Length: 495
Image 1 (cartoon, one colour):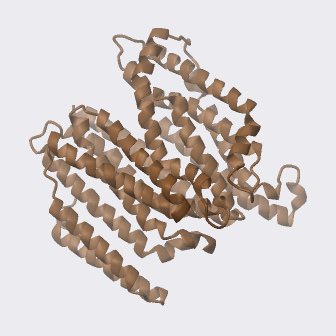
Image 2 (image 1 turned 180 degrees about the vertical axis):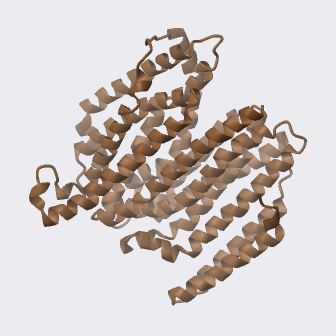
Image 3 (image 1 turned 135 degrees about the horizontal axis):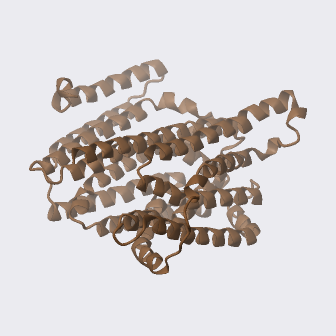
C-alpha cells in the first residue's frame, strides 16, 4: 500500500508539474502576442478560433480516454491492446470523417466565422491549419491516455513539454525574428514570409509543433496488431457518451463566452477588437487557475488516501480552509500589483483590466466547488458532478446571451462569476445533507470579508504616485498576511 501511494505521488508530481509548467510557459506567450500582433482584433480572432478547437477536441474524443482506462484495466475480460486498438480505430474513424467534412465545406465554415467582423479578413488557411491541429490533437489523446495506463509519466510529460517549447520557439521565430529580418534583410525570407499574415503564423507555429509531437507518438501506434472489437466498442460508447456531455458542459463553461461574444456584441467598435482586449485580460486570471490545478493534482490522491481515516472529514475541512486562505492571497496579490502586471500588455488592452478581479473570484469559486466535490466522489454519486456542470454551463450561456449586448465583455466575466458561485452554493448545501463535513465557515467568512475590505480600500483610496500606491497596497497585503500567520499559518509547524 505504501509503495502504491509513493508511486501515485511520484506520478502525480510529474503530471502536475508538467501541466502547470506548460500553462506558465504558454501564459508567457500572451504578452508576446499582445505586443507583436498589430491590433487586439487579431488577438480576438486567434482566441475565437482556439475556442472552437477546444470544444471540438472534446467532441471528437467523446469520452473515450476515460473509457480506455476503464476497460483496459479489466484485464480478466479484455486484452488491454485490444481495448487500445479498438479505441484508436473508433476515434480515428470519427476524426477522419470530421476532417473530410470540414475540408469539403471549408469556405462556408470560414464565412460563418467571419460573419461577426467587417474589419478583419479571416483566411480559409486559418481554419484548415486549425482543422489539422485539432484532428492530430484529438487522435493523439488516445496514445497519450495509453501512456498513462502503462504508467509512463516521464514520456507523457516530456512530449507535452516538447510541444510547448516548440510552439514558443516557432512563435518567436515568426513573430519576432522574421519581422526583424524582413526589416533589415528582406531578401533572405521573402520566399516564405508575408508580413501581413501575422496572426496566421501563430496557427502555423501550432501546426508545426503539433505535427512534431505527433511524430514522436508513432512508436505508440506500432508494434501490435490492430483489432476492432465491435461488442467492446458498444460497451465503451455506453460508458463514455455520458462523459461527453460532462466534458462539453465543462469546456463550454470555459470557452463559450469567446464564441458567443462576436455574435451578441452590439457596442461601438469591432467585436474582435473587444474580444481581444477581454481575452488578454482574462489571461491574468490564469494565475488563479494554475493554483487550482496544482491543488487539484495533490487533492484527489489526498482525499482518497484519507477516506478510511477516523479524522477524514477534519482533513477535508482543513484542506478547504487553506485553499481559501491562499486563494484569497493570490486574489489580493494580483489585484494590488495590477499596475505592474499590466505592463505585460500594450496600453490598448488596459481598458479591459476591470474584468480581472471578477475573473479571479469566479475561478476561486470554481476551485471551492472542486474541493466540495469530495462528497459525491466518496459516496459514488458522481452523476451530481455532471448535473452541477450542466447547471453552471446553462447559467453562463444564458447570462452571456442576455447581457453581452448591454455590458460588452464585462458580461462575460460576470457570467462565469455567477455560474461558478451558483454551483458552489448548490454543491455545498447538498453535500452537507449527504456527506456532512464541518467546514470552518467562521474562518471562511473572516478571510473573505477581510480580503474584500482590503481590496475595497485599495480601490477607493486614490494615490496618484505609482510608488506610493504600491507601498500602500503592500501594507494592506501585509495586514492579510499578519492575520493569516497569527490565526492559522504557524511557521514553526510548517513542514
